[in-house]
Structure formats: structure tokens, C-alpha cells
Length: 114
Image 1 (cartoon, rainbow, N blue to C red):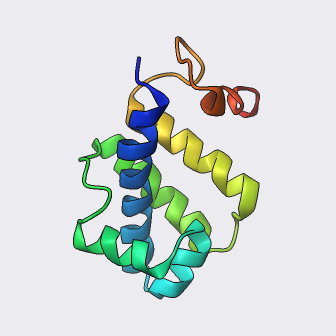
Image 2 (tube, helix red, strand yellow; image 1 turned 90 degrees about the horizontal axis):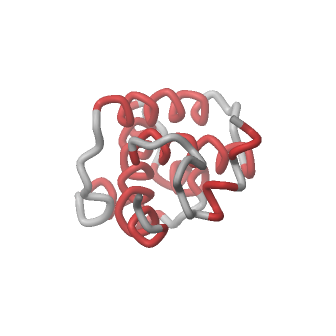
Image 3 (tube, one colour; image 1 turned 180 degrees about the horizontal axis):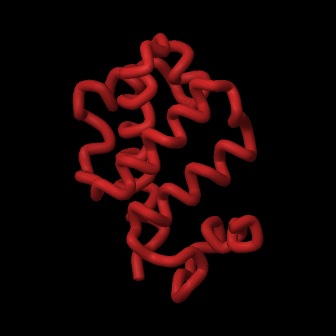
């Protein structure tokens, strides 16, 4: 079982970093990446330099990030829909099933959507 704080400080930044890297490969400008992910251009620069989001993700999670980045790039996802999809990728990165033995109230709020 992983506490929410670990998800917040380790996994979520690494997922965001991987999505940002995939979006940059798709030639999206950093300012637009920041807007899409709801963060700042400075945060995107930190992702790109490896100063933020340094946890190594498994291949399955990286692939999920790139699939999500493609949907973002195509304009399919915004706002709460994007947040729900990021939560799904976090679950893949955690290596657990959403809601199973997981005390995270935030994760649990997405159980019905899966």
C-alpha cells in the first residue's frame, strides 16, 4: 500500500514528466504543454532537465503516458477528463488496481469511472 504523499511527491511528477516528454517529441511548444498539464513553463523545464519527476517508470506506465500525450495533442482531453486519465496512468505506475486496498480518497473517487 502506498500513501497518498508518495503518489503526490514521486509518482505524479514522474507521470507528468513522461507526458511532457512525449508531448515535446510531438513538437508541442513548452508553453502549450504547461497549459495542457495545468502547470507552469518553469515546471516543464524542470521535467525536461530531470530536476522534477525523476522516479523511473515501468514500460507499461511510460507507454500509457505516451498514449495519453497523443490524445492531449489531438485535443481530445481537457480539464476533469484529463485528470481522470492521469489518475488511471498513476494507477498503472503504482502497479495496483484502483481502489483495491488503497486508502487514497482521491484515487477512490475515480473507481466508478473505470
